[in-house]
Amino acid sequence: MRPVTLITGASSGIGTELARVFAAHGHELVLVARRADRLNSLADELAAAGRPRPTALAIDLGQRDAVAKIVSELSSREVEPQHVVNNAGFGLMGEAAKLDRSEQLAMIDLNVRALTDVSLTFIDSMSRHRGGLLNVASIAAFLPGPGMAVYYATKAYVLSFTEALHREFSDRGIKATALCPGPVPTEFQARANMELPAAAKIIELPPDRVAQIGYDALMRNQRVAVAGLANKIVASLMHFTPHAVLLRAINQRTAGGR
Image (cartoon, rainbow, N blue to C red; front, side, top):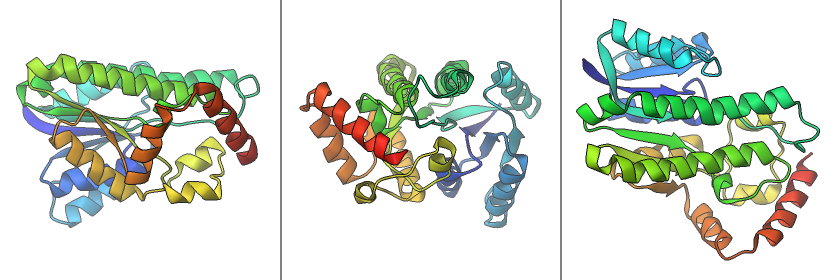
């Protein structure tokens, strides 16, 4: 079975940039997202740059049989993941009591259940090829999140889960990294119905920079990679700030964003 890098949520933003970074380092890619047109356009771009043309799989990871479909598609092509990148996910801004419950549950399904399923499904192949797992969390993983309660909670799960796997995988020869970006100008904000405050520009990073940080951290087997110096400072300060203070500050910020 030929080793490949599997990237979910590859049709836009950080996922697209991660595909470009992995391709630039010679990885053969399998790209997964719902939008076939976006995936095929990216595959064409990478092929035109002289890279192996990625395999594009238009699969909705929110569906319960999504990972089984991915496994079937990979098997039919006689490839298996050496590296797995879980980037698919979304957020919603608003009070949990006011947001649509089914949409919030769908967020958990994608951000948590699907990520967990993908992470665990390919352990054997990652071990065979001495590869790695890169899970995209967020700086939100370090915070309580009134105004985006479910989203923040899902990212806290991603961080905790990946840190644990980093330790568990050490005897299997598998790297595991949680990538924690702060604000990134992508389609995420529009999907979340979010307007970032002007102060967020201070810690904002472009998606290509975040992707490079994530790739480098995975290759070094870094347990957690907080993207950007300003975000590292913010994350460090959070450890010393009482949650009561953080809750008030975040609640005021998100209320202003709405």
